Length: 99
Image 1 (cartoon, one colour):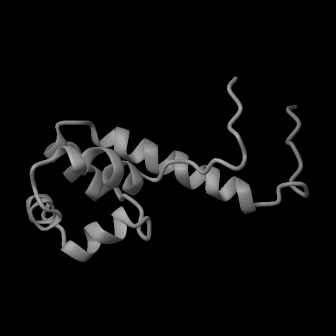
Image 2 (cartoon, one colour):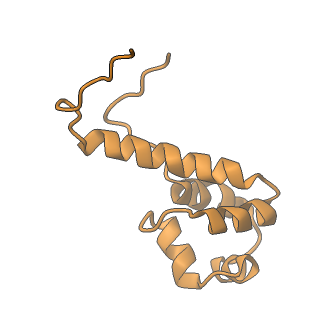
């Protein structure tokens, strides 16, 4: 199993969109938001990592970019789990014993 370096944050889907996907597109953010059927502010919030990619947005992103909605949701879930693991103390939670 590959261990992640604790100081390297996981990739938020917005970062991936902002740094990798959108620079390769010949469209403005306004045009992309319009094509996705979301507000410009909603797209900016995702790009700035202020909002998560929801299931509905993942469907839209998947359709527009020719990818799977699942890949966008998986990226968001991995980000959410990693961020939660960094701030959640599980030391008081016992491990269940099987019968």
